[in-house]
Image 1 (cartoon, one colour):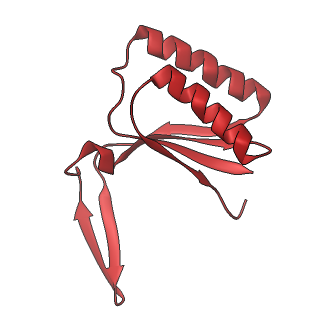
Image 2: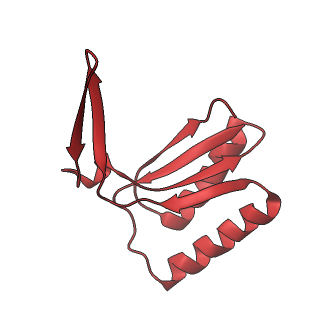
Length: 107
């Protein structure tokens, strides 16, 4: 099962300790073959919406930081419980913020 974990805006300010802790965590998941991909996203972007076949594009940045995903990780695990356990470890490092966890279909 593959899950997408996202971090939305907010959270702890990055410092040397955060980078070190996260680096160890990412290395562990990479060695175990659990981490498929990670990345950061630009805070600006283009929001898309469609209604009655008409597509509307709205440029960011967005009004509220919590409206945007700032980074993501794709993990491959055996169960949702395993994904939740990894997410809990991740948030223990980051401490503050919001995010989502979603099952990826069509793997």
